Length: 326
Image: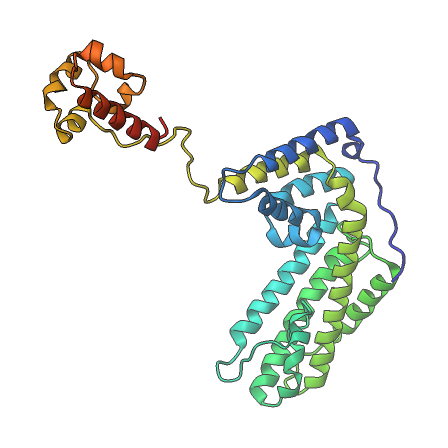
């Protein structure tokens, strides 16, 4: 593969000061590490954030990061590269959906590993089975659809006269030009199975090479600087907050209180009901209100004279407070 030309890196956003970028990155790290009260661990959030460090994942996720990247590329005047990758993804998805809809319930089978590993070669595994007129018709229709998609793609992103022409290695551009010239003579005949398959596979290989070249250029030339921009780091901070809040339970800052134990119930249950009114007059309603009282306090303030009762009240209050960490 020919050496990819370096892109113009003169955009003002690339000149963001190291101090600003470092500060925002440090803040991002602190935010991620502080998310310990959520349903997602810091490591899980970090794994999610790593997805935004490659163009493959950004295109696949197709979330707000796409808009942030678009604005960055507009300033660099490279927005056609992202549009091209998105267009390739749309072609791939539309072809996959059409293939699934056309598949017969009696003949459909899971794609082979060699087929599924190629984003465009979804039809290759069926080649030996293309024998019936129905299959030939479907093959011609699929080939015709792919030719139209490729010609539109070529005119938009490959043709040097197009305003949205992307930067590609010369060898890949020449391959695309050759495939395009061949596609202009395509005829969706029902009997030309081999010709249809050849057309489909040549388009597959060309699109794969274009897709790979653009992604390599993105990951090597654009992503390293894009990841340092304040806009991208701000997006990550926003994403951290979103991930932290997803399915996370509401955490109350109040600690749970022990079940209320009334002084009256304690006294009556332990045969000391005669003292209920004494405690009630002093507005001591619950046992936890007695945690700081001593045996001498019960004798002097509540006029409890029986030593057995004094010891029993002290023991019951101490047990309750100890068991409930009061």
